[in-house]
Image (cartoon, rainbow, N blue to C red; front, side, top):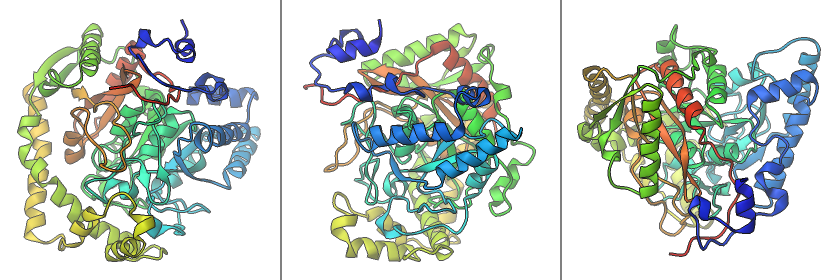
Length: 530
């Protein structure tokens, strides 16, 4: 029976929800949208057949944003719309009519996280009032790549302010410029950060695909919690030029989509060696422009998957049930499961990560602001602005992470250099563990279910997360929907060594096709009584 019928009449026993207050206005129901759950392939077919133009697709997504993001459930995932979106779509339509196609992203509407430069009429602010009014002089390298690929830049998404690097008591998905983004599965739940807007927008079908950024968990966590696919690529696969930085060691952009194939398409469109980001030189002859060629429904056959032991016990029983079901799926598709104890090996790198991020944030942000045309020019200026505008800039939590970063010295300091050496041992630890056990990937639950939005106390954990190892190593990490726990999504992770995106995509796609756990949100309101 149609799950939406159960939700409409309040009979939720079949999905484990009882005594739940909720409201789903009929005109906001997920299935009522013409492009609901549409893939890039399906959108291309509509444009190729003449059924819809890129301009028509763009109009439909803009209408969806007006109805779902700004009104109705009021997800607040989009911080700014691109006034040139329809003009870009028209130009892509003209090229198609003339017989030219730039590839699978031609005419596809994309949302971009608001810490990524767009050299257009939109601002780039990292959600901070301190950067309000800042217009980048040119596109970030990855945005320029998307424009070359024919993408329609639809707008910018809200995020956790400063990519969740402002306070130890922050609420993910909140920024002083954009306010609070909501989780489309339950509107009182947090969409996770820092790519909260991108995750919520993709899940709610406000765009075809979106771009997020990650330092540690900021692509994979909101992807998991919003029931979508997220790829945190190898650091160096995608350029960071034109992205407001936290860490030169760990930062990367990444695709967020409803299917593995769409994420693979978006990933390929953004790759490229950037002379202004030396780390991308390492990706030369390792990068691909088409990652879809690696997608294989039998991609798990003969693979050895290392399951992190700490996720096999404890935690929420609903998450545990889904995790065991996922492991059963892996085995059924021909994978061999090997239990590993990675977390116990990472104590030292974990102890220095915060120090590394604070040093690199101060250095990177000062360099970014020095070249920008914003009203603030240094981290010290940002801190001063927030203090002077406390009621608007800091109504719920403070800026102790910014202040701690400001106290750090230069990158040639002994403290930083010693910490960096310890952090980078993560790569050797992962490589050695995988070699010793002849593993093709490491896997676990991506994170727990979404916590409630709490602007008083901030975020809280609902279960262990698996973002740390790949983040600290700079290695690729893909999360795929694993199912719902009391209506809230949970993701399953695949991690491997540097530039192993093709291998991970094979396995992630095989898991996705065998499990089919992506479920569109229905914008529930209310809470389950305790």
